[in-house]
Length: 323
Ligand code: SF4
Ligand code: SF4
Picture 1 (cartoon, protein in one colour):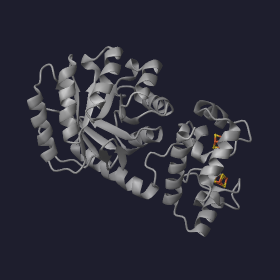
Picture 2 (tube, helix red, strand yellow):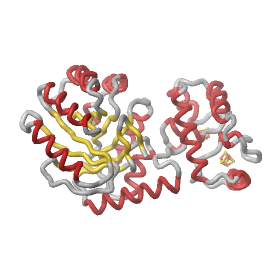
Picture 3 (cartoon, protein in one colour):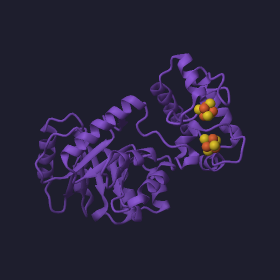
Picture 4 (cartoon, protein in one colour):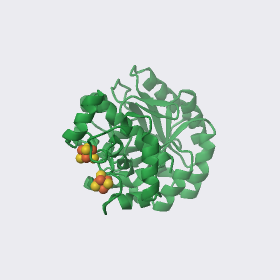
C-alpha cells in the first residue's frame, strides 16, 4: 500500500488507458485516463469520463492525465480531480517551457490536488529534476518506454535525489520487468496498452509478493547496484567498498552513518543479533541473501522474514529522512 497525497494505492501497478475507451474494472492499484488535451476536449467531457471511471466499480485509485496550452483549464481540471480525490497528472505535450511548468505547479497544488508530472528522461535534465524535487508535486512519472535496459538506471537516479514518489511507465512483459523497476526505486509501475488480464494478474502477483516479502520495492544491496535505500543492509564502513560512494551521495560521513544506524535500531528487534557478522541485525543483509547466521537469530527471536524486511524498510526511510 502506497499513501501519496490523498491517494491510497493498494498495489504498485497502474494501468493507463485512453479517455475514449470504455471504463472497465481492474485490479490495478491505480487506473489512469490518458489523453485529455484540454485545448480540444471540454472540461465537461473530462468530468463525465472521470465519473464513468469512478463508477466502473474497482476499488483502486483513479487519475487523469491532461495537458493544455492555457493554465486556466488545467486549474479547473485540478479542482475537479481534487473534489473526487483523484490524481491529476500533467503531461508536458503542451507545456514545453520549464518555467511555465514550475510556475504552474504551485497554483495547481493550491487546489489541494494530488499531483503528478509525466516526463520523458530526455526532457528531464539534472537541473529540472532538482527544481521539480523542490516543488510540492507528489509523483514524478517517468516515461521510460523504448529505453530497453536503461530504464532502471533512470529510476535509480531519480530515487537517489530523494524527491517525490516515483511512477515508472515502461514496456513490461513479465513480473521480473516490473520487479526490476521497483527494486531500483519505483513506487508504482505503470502500463499502457496492455491486456487487462495481464495487468490483473500482475497486480495480484504484486499484492502477493508484498504480503510475503514485507517490502515490495525492496532495493538491491548497494554493491549490487541498488539505490541509496540499500544502505539499510550495509555493514559498518570498515573496508573500501561501494558504501563509501553511497554515503557521499547521501551526504553522510561513515561515522554519522554508524551513529544513525545504531540510534535508529535502538529498542527495535534490529538491535539484537548476537552471532551475526557485526553483532546486530541492523548491519545484516537482505533476506534474499542466504545466511544461516542471520536466519538462526531470526528463528531464535521468532521474527518472521517479512517483519525483518518491513523493519529494514522503515530503517531505510528513517536513515535517508534524517540526513
Ligand atoms: S557495506 Fe557491505 S553491503 Fe554495503 S556496499 Fe559494502 S559490501 Fe556491500
Ligand atoms: S550475518 Fe549474514 S546477513 Fe548478517 S551481515 Fe553477515 S552475511 Fe550478512
